[in-house]
Image (cartoon, rainbow, N blue to C red; front, side, top):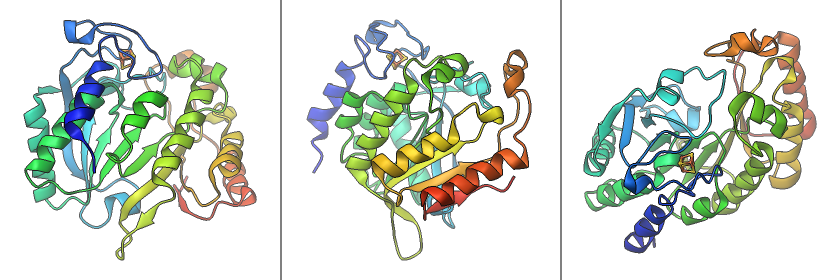
Length: 293
Ligand code: SF4
């Protein structure tokens, strides 16, 4: 049983000074100040919709009730959604309006509520979840993130989040700093993945193959092995489990600022992708999905 009246103020306290994400900017967001995520206390939503393009166990047959938040704690030079993540495109929603979004998505038949890029606005999201729950919203919650998460914030989400859907973007923090301005990403991501796995375990599906609880790790293969894909897979296999569902993505294409980074300024080759697919099998993963190249 989640004690929302205690949890919500505790989450809001982490906003001022802001320690919500690993950047630990320390700004007083309640006073209108902003840090690296360029967000004070407003919730900006780029879109909300029943989305059919997620992993099969998330989208199912009726779609995932996806809410895309504006801004991000990372600044990836290859972000394909940079107008939303970096330029803040979206509309301001009150907490009540966000709760109403969840009710609407449920009434449209969504299998779950899927928060995309939620880390910098999680106090307001949990506040809205509480209000939506009181009005009958009973769907599982998906935390769909970059995987750059503060451990103390994550611990507060135990029992609230049903399905974690984080990225594992880089095996090497030097690359993470260069391409995403994320200090210590690799170390922080590993700690976050372990905590998420501790909270929800391997993915559990219902009789129709729809996710109810668990962890799915996404990994986007970058050109010139810029992500360190094989090392990431080895880490998950060794430190979590080969039962973890891996969603391997080949969809990378140059975007946003990749013109400044010649090693990122092309798509991946079939040979590069095959190397990671082979590693997935060699390491022993049994569950998950792989995009076609
Ligand atoms: S959530 Fe935003 S303001 Fe807070 S620590 Fe992270 S980047 Fe900084």
